[in-house]
Structure formats: C-alpha cells, structure tokens
Amino acid sequence: MKRRWAKRAYKFQGFLNYVYSLVLLRYSGFRSSLLKDQLARIGCDRLQIGCGNVILDHWLNVLYERRQEYGKLIQKGKGWFLNYNLLKPWPVADNSLAFVAGSHVIEHLDLNQGIKLLENAYRALKMGGVIRLSCPDLEKYAKAYVQKDKAFFNHPLIQEWCAFKTARTSGQIFIAKAYDSGGAHKWFYDFESLADILARAGFNDIKKVSRLEGEMPDKDLLEPAGRGRNAFLS
Image (cartoon, rainbow, N blue to C red; front, side, top):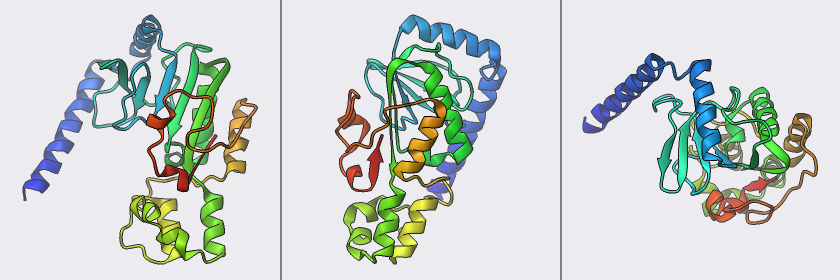
C-alpha cells in the first residue's frame, strides 16, 4: 500500500513540475534563447546525453524526464544538470562543444530520432570535436544466438542487464535486450548501422573502440565496468 501511494505521489509531483515548466514558458523559444545565453556564459564544452544519475564535474549533464522541471540549469558540484529534450534544437551555440558523450542512450530512440540527435550533435561540435556513443551490440547478440552460445546469454552480466527477469532461453534474452522494459529500447545497432547514421550526420573517422579506449575524458565514469561485454563504443 505504501509503495502504491509513493508511486502516486511521484506521478503527481511530476505533473506539477510539468505544469510549472509550462507556466514559466520553459518550453518556449524565448526561454530557449535565455538558456542558450546562460550556457554561453558558463562556457562548458562537454555535454553528456542521457546522464541518468551520473553527474560529471565540468560537464553539462542532460536528461529528458517529463516529471522533472524542464529547462532549468542547475549546478551540481562542479558540473551542471539540465532537463531538456535534445531532439529539439540544442541550447548551445553551433561549433561550441569539444566532446559529446552518450552511454546507452541511442538505443532508446528510434532510427529517425537517432539521426536527428546526431545531426544536432554535429552542429554543436567544434571542428575536430569528438562524439562517443555506446549501446548493446546487435552483432554480438545475433552471433551468440545463431551459434547457440548459451554461455554468452547465461553470463552474470548479461543476466544482470536484462530487464525481463523471467527471460530464460537465449531467444528470450535476445528479444528482452531488444525491447528492454516493455519497449524502452527502440532500436538495436551493430557497428555498421551506427557508423552509417553517424556518417549521414556528417561525422568521419568513425572507430569502434573498447570501453576505456578513445579520445574522451572521464571514460571510466561514463562507462561503468561490465558494459564492455555487451556494448561497443564509437
């Protein structure tokens, strides 16, 4: 009973946050312009997409959550947090970022949304800027499934990151990864398909690297240990 009321209170608070953001016109172009000026004054050139609870120092950490107040820049420690929909025009100047990082975010967007996100990232990055993405690797899962590699699907880390705890067979776990929590995952990439949409957005010199490789600060914080088994990074 307590848990049910806690969930209701959480949803109601989320509704109030949404209404409050609308009243303050935080979804408007005018507010976006003010936010852009505010971010320009800060001068942060690192942006983390879909930060979740990982707030990095010296980064602009962005998450889009309807239940949180929208469009308000909040300083947390030595970093900044912003609830903002990055499928909309980004609130940073073009050619202003050195780094963009997205750990296990791109699979939560469908293909068209993923392309849109990367186009926005490309405009925001400076010449020579770096984007780093990680997500579950379709090729690894498909090969393990076809080869009937039960050890892969029974590995503790694969089991831990499977949202459907009732999934037992290799096929069930494979599809569970594709759909995640009832559809939270909207696309499943291999390196070729992710490299394709990066190239369409304008990126070049696209590489597949391991968890702690690549030109990106704070890799160990962006990528928790264990993801190297079922993720690839670009």
